[in-house]
Amino acid sequence: MALFRAKKPAGKPGEWFYCIEHHKVEEGPECPAKDRFGPYATREEAQRAMDTAAERNLQWDTDPRWHDKGDRDDEDGPAAS
Image (tube, rainbow, N blue to C red; front, top):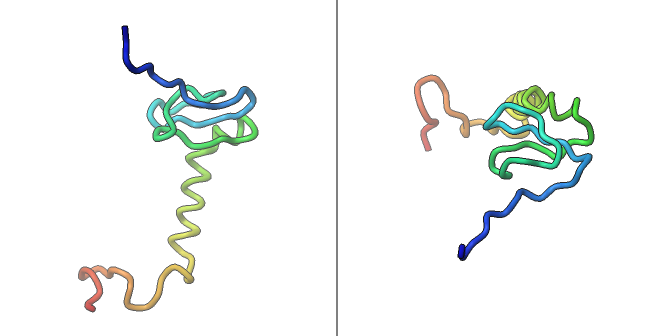
């Protein structure tokens, strides 16, 4: 008799996820939360999950509000304090 039962990831039909472990779209979801992006409203949105993440990362990386002078690392190493 098992003391612990494996939990099935929570989700609903009609919610779409992208599994970064298996590189596939899931409805439901099937994989643990640590391995997926979502939920998305459509399968197509879930298929674009990696592109969406890359676009958002670029926006954050180039947003001047998140880079104060002296806080950035330059090519020579961390900024001196």
